[in-house]
Amino acid sequence: VSDWSSDVCSSDLTELKEWLKGEGQSEKTASPSPLVVKESAGAAGFELTTRQLGEAIAAQKLLNEHNLQTTIFEAVEFYVRHAKPSGGEKSISEAIEELLAVKRRAGKKENYIKNLAWPLKRFASDFEDSKIHEVTKEDFESWLDEEDFSLPTRRNYIRDCNILFNFAISKKWMNVNPTEGLEKPTVEDKEIRILTVRQAARLLLTAQKHEEYRPWLAPVAIMLFAGVRTSEIKRLDWNDVRSKQIVITAANAKTRQRRTITITPALESWIACDRKSSGPVFPKGKCWRRGFSALVAAAKIQPWPRNALRHSFGSYHFALHKNENLTAAEMGNTPEVVFKHYRAVILDGDEIRFWNLINRRQEGKVVPFKVA
Image (cartoon, rainbow, N blue to C red; front, side):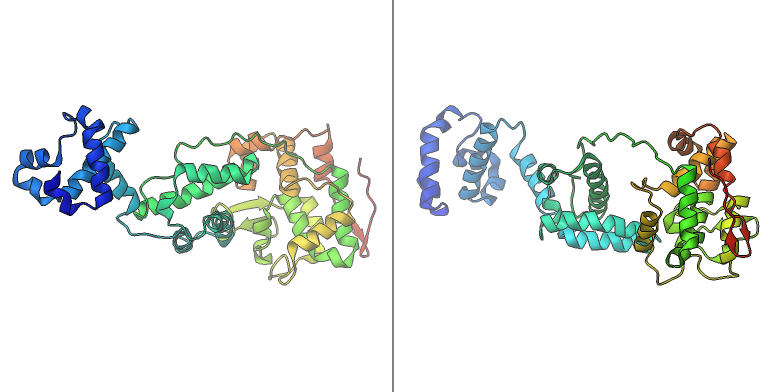
């Protein structure tokens, strides 16, 4: 031991001496002394200092204590792989910004990017400026537990952060995805709720009778009788509302696929007075959410079913035609989605009443009609 004391600080030397006299005696065959290692290794052994060899012995002891069936080399290799990623170090915030930039360059819709950015930035704020490769599965799972998210929210965070971590792996900023192997929450589909025929009529009449809600009349009618999404109605131009059909261009469609929707007599009756040759269907400068919420409150439809206009269209359309392929084509969905989600229980005959909600005017006034 005295031959290599000059390479080891006094505290390390004392600890190593005690170990060699004690536990080291029982591990001679597994962990020979540094001098024996040097002699058996030949010239290569003398490239390491006696301090490094002593640390190797201590490292092996640590592995044995934790019953880790691995070699010192494998342990060091694992550390290097995780501590120093080959692509360089990135903070979580930096990785998020680069991911979003890539999504933009790939032509993803801004709404998608915003929906992805919000949870990722929330995650980053809780981990402050940590490097992304430092996040372990245990760290991520503990964070989910501490936040006590609802099951749908927990599932969404796992999904969105999985996108971030896979992106970081592709850039070699980390080697292991912390979401890998996590149990994804099972979330039961909520029952689809739709507007009754009476509620649909009341909503349309309220928008027509009150000047402050009039800008919402044509958009609401198109969403109700054509199943157009909110994101699509905000981008729809009167140029695309033809005489017999509405054209949802690929650029405006959520799915990036062009589709056409039949304009029924009911829909035509509600948009006829507001039709223009061109220009946005929903006026620019208006706040959709605030005005629509006020319209719903004025029509006294509480509580408002989530996504009620599109769900109503899908359910009444499927009930009338009994053809999931036709309904899917109009909605821009797959037949499987239609069959699974748009089969709300509809009272006998209500599908006929819904599609007969014709707005009959006489000298600019609404002629009352019966809604059963």
